[in-house]
Length: 91
Image (cartoon, rainbow, N blue to C red):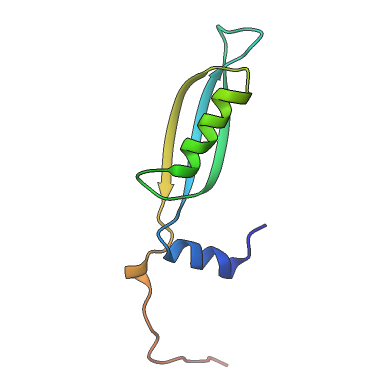
């Protein structure tokens, strides 16, 4: 599990939560497609983490890739961070 303070620091550096929907041919039944969901913080639009994972897949996993769909979510970005001028407590 990633520390929430670390998550914010990662996002402020430009990383986004990436979800990849990966379809691949089953090794024993190549006519069937199986779905695999992969999720990690990555840098868009280059996606170095995703590309590294897909290269690993092609080298080490028997099921050949069919297609990959990518979604990213910008939860926080540097231009969304701002200083707070006041803090109020309701009792």
